[in-house]
Length: 297
Image 1: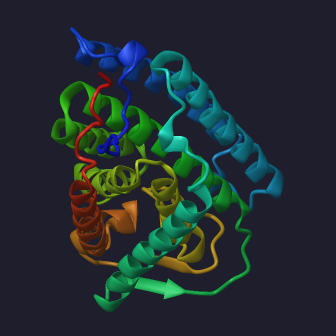
Image 2: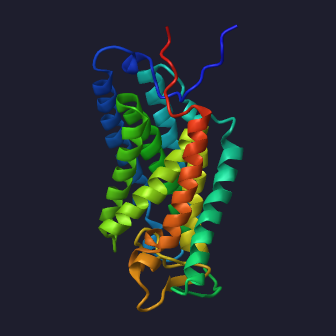
Image 3: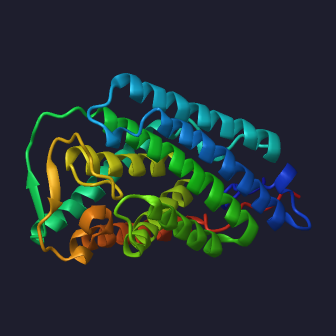
């Protein structure tokens, strides 16, 4: 009886078949998918980036969800056609449980970071107040689904196919941080914090499960908890509607508080995110998912 396959399924047929220049084919496929799904992501944002306006509406949430769902379906068909497989990273059987676990972990991590900021005496927290959550829900779905699809299923997976796990981990984390430099109030320190605490941590959940659902849940809950529940800036973007309001105290050191970029650039978030990344990456390594599944004979 054959042994069960071990390792992460990252593509090994059709366009990614073994042979000469597979690293180049994987890189070209990655770039093509990156451009295509960046356009889909831009479409989701054009529905309205809800952080820039008051309220938001249920219709906006439904529109963003539909666009993100279409993006996942298009990715599935593209992988089926080009790689000869239905993507395990989108396996639906495990989706409800892994999304739920991810949502709990993401909310807990961000809340722990804010608690650290408060206990260090560098954050003021006020409220509660009446506020609509719809805009932040739409933002959380949009960023959670599309950024994880692009950064983990496309960038990390295909860099791993081309160059192996360690270059892939480092490069996708660095890119994730660098892309946040376009955000308001960004700085090199904030980008480095995002790369380490989020880029590695979210990659760890994908590597651990071999699927996107847990990393999507963590990412979405992190952003929603940060924006609507605690009312802190999300990656440098000030929120308009929130249940509580959290902000750095005047004169608080930026390395402790994160400054105008928000909690993600703070020392407590770095500690929480980095420790979580170390644990989850270790579990993924122990599971055998730091290597690709063997090519078919």
